[in-house]
Image (cartoon, rainbow, N blue to C red; front, side):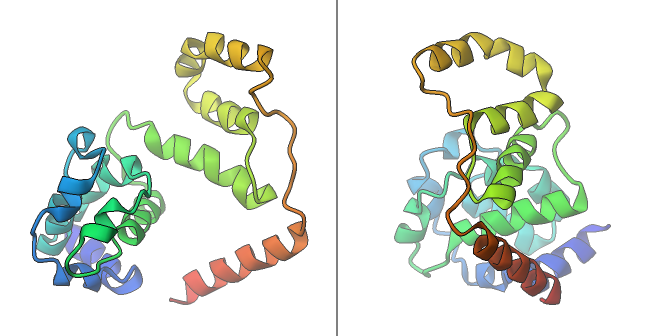
Length: 182
């Protein structure tokens, strides 16, 4: 898909039009605790999207490093819910199969998302196993930490689904339907 089509999709399907109100003040990037580690701060990422450089925006690590602390939202003078756009960009990158070469954060996101959708919760072991399947070398490097956590009974291995799993799955199904309809 070309940049123009990606831009149109982001602005139409994922409500990207809100970032057209961005005045590029940099409050979001200045308040983000992880901005120094991002390829582009939120301000720069939104400028890429507005200018139509969607492939560069979707290949960035910015949205994957967002921890949803909402500092950016609180500081934004235009009341842009920046975290929502970060989630939208993650979803779009996954849907388009676009990511930076060697990027691992999308795989960690997927390892987390799967158990949440299935049980409404996660366990440490589930996330670690799903991630380790794609990145076994990383898993081996962290094996000693996992053993220490297990020894101290700080590594959750049993799944405790949400109490109303049937209701939770209905909500998830409805959310997917609404997403496809938009």
